[in-house]
Amino acid sequence: MATLAPVDTATQMAPGEWEARVDLAAAYRLVAHYGWDDLIFTHLSARVPGPEHHFLINPYDMMFEEITASSLVKIDVEGDPVGPSRHPVNPAGFTIHSALHMARADAAAVMHLHTPHGQAVSAMEFGLLPHTQTAMIASHDVAYHDYEGIATDLEERERLVQDIGDKHAMILRNHGTLTVGDSVASCFIRLYFLERACEAQVHMLSAGRENLTKPHQGVEEKVAHQSNPQGMGMLAQRLAWPALLRKLDRIDPSYRE
Image (tube, rainbow, N blue to C red):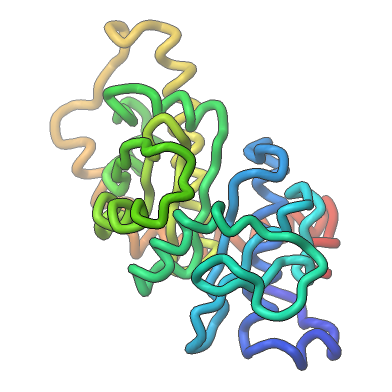
């Protein structure tokens, strides 16, 4: 779905890099559109196709609604820019992302947010409750990682990888939400379901946990089967992501520049 890069830009990129840039820039714009951004903080990252361990990340001096495909910064596994860049990057912010990109071949994209609803659920001892359909779609694929302070300690990467295991989403306790995917599309759709589940949970708990209706026995397992990672990835790539790109094109297509 990505547009072609300008000739002078494309000649400097590996095959597939421009498409990855357009998709990641779209994800940043969508995060801003849904009100999930946190000024210039938090990060969405994507692996650059090819044998090098290179990644794309946001310029640290830009709001999410400003980000374009060409403004994304290419970095190495340590978070340092690859080649010259007009924009600063935040190497410390890549600590979490680099751990997952390097440990899992299917982590082509990693997205991490600090939304109020995600933070609220991350602070709840019982975590994500399976009381809504959206939560049941998300919860069977969610792991948890205890808070260790602002993620600047490279030694934390090993524990992040161990905690997420083979799941595609994680609630960073007392911190926020995170998803991984084999494409920007699947990563974003998982993030959407996780964030919506957290938002619903915050609202429903206003009624008191004792007043909530829990699904009958076996329903959670049925929904988990119905929303398996393969099916979710196909749903994202073929249906939801193209529709989201059309939405962005109607609002402001400049993310493609």
